[in-house]
Length: 257
Image (cartoon, rainbow, N blue to C red; front, side):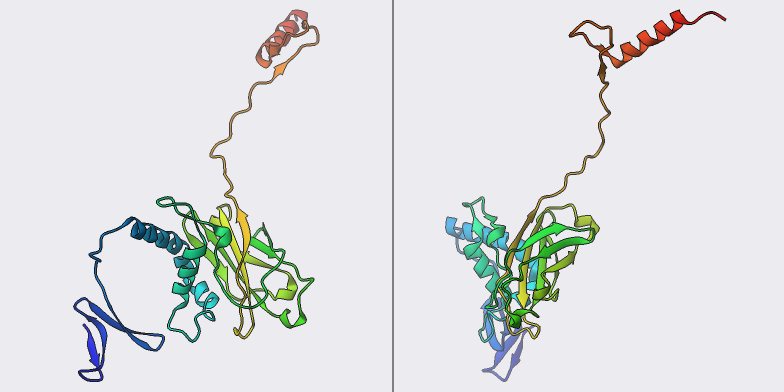
C-alpha cells in the first residue's frame, strides 16, 4: 500500500497500482513497474543477456561493491552496485550474442584514485589463498593502505572476501578459503583502501587458479613383464608365467623326504 506524504501534492511512498515511489540517495523517485509491452528486438535480447552475465558475478559481491564503488558515486544520485554493473557491462563482456561471457581479467570491483597493487601473485596455502604484491616503489604515505581481497568461484557463483586486510607495506596477505572450495576454479582480485576510507584504488586482477580434478577411484597396477635370464632375445614372459616356471623348477630340484 502506498502512502501520500505531505498532502495532495506530496510524494508517494510504496506502491499504488503499477507505480512505486521511494527515496534514493535523498531524492524522491517514482517509476512504473510491471512487464514491458515492447517487443524483444535482437538488441534488447543482447542487452538482457549481458545484464545476466554481469549480475551473476556481481550479485554475490554486493557488500564488496558498496565499498569499492562508494566514492565513485559520492555526491550523485547513482548507487554503487548500478555503477559497477554499468562499468563491467561496457568493459568486461566478451563474445557475441547469444554466447556472451565475462572476461575476468577486465572486471573491476573497485574504482578510485589510489595507486593500484603492482606485481601481484597468488598461490594456495593450507588455509586458503596467499596474495603477494610489490612494495619497492611504495611511497611512505601509502604504507598503511589496507588490502581488500576477493575470490570468485565460477562453479557455484559464490565469493570469499575481506575488506580490511594487511597493510600495503607488508607485501602479502592470506584470504581464508573454506575447505569445500579450496580445489575449485578461482578468480582473484585485490584493491587498496585508505584506513579512513577516503580513497580507494582500482581493483587489480590477481589471476586464476584452475580446479583440481580428483580421481574418483585408483586404477589397479598392470602386471609387469619379466624377461628371464635364459630367454631368447626379444622374448618376454608375463609375471604369472615366470612365477609358474619357477615353481615347476623348484619342484623338480627338491629331493623327496
